[in-house]
Length: 447
Image (cartoon, helix red, strand yellow):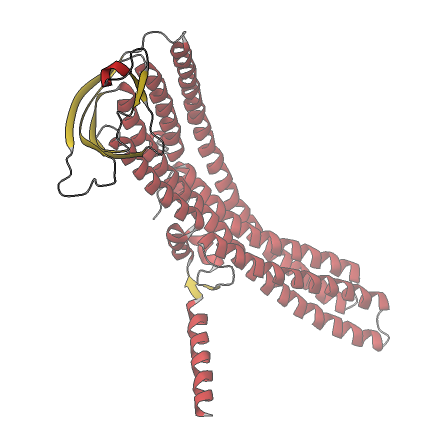
């Protein structure tokens, strides 16, 4: 029994530890920093950089000394024969004697060192490998900016959903109170059944919206976990407050912030694309140049009618060879010229795309500033409208219970309030989201 209780305790304690490990408390900034290190896209980007480094070294090794060893073993299952005139061996003239000149077994072992002395394609390849590494590093930087925006949106969606749930719960509570009071008034014959039914319809809609929003809350948390690189069942405790985030992300100085296009990651990527096209053209041009390489080898061979190559007294005959190879391209039926012309066109297209990127990035900044300013203005307007809608709804509620207004007037005031509540919550998220979009457009680095 004691052993059984101990096992139960161990299982319970282990489960508790695992549960604790799966719970995280994060502010929005902490969530961004965590995602930069752990999100799926960023992990892939890091792997791509490592692969690019290995690719760079692979290209470098082409111009370094190469050593290869080779061992050949041959065993004649049925040896070839040659024919000698019979008179050479004392035979009858005019006839031939079959003889075997090749031993039954032979073995050859050699080591060859080769060295590339000059090849234009290799030199271009080294430059291309560096460019490829730079492309991977820039892709990582671009991924980090996209991760920041994705986390801000996912984190904000969770906060907005939680805020919406609190608002809906409060609206439900108020409606239930109003419905109970109206039911009592109707039971006393002081109001019409229509007023009760109208409140029942409104309450039913609120309850349905609340249930749906609670389901969306679970999905919002799962989406945030995916953005962070976590299993979707990880429990998250968000420590940032939506209203505080709005205050922190309201920065009108950004609207006057200068834009330096040369530092923008998208412009750097376009420049790197242009550089890769330039190197491609240079590669095709290098194929008109000769290539020069040298080699030296050392080997030994032997033969025997039996497999006795590793006996101490077995004799091996060594040899060595030094050579230089010069390969000169002469005529390719204009194939090289055609490939060079295609590469030149690709470079011209890259120049066009680079100019296009420059114009689009400038436009993107102007649009992001406009949308951010609009987001702040919408938030201020939504905040004022919410206060007005709350006062209007409260007045209509008082008038309704005093018998001055109808349930239809109260319904209109309630729907207006619910709309303004939704607008207010969405405007807060919009300020946060537009701020990070503007930061990315201005290429403001991660904090």
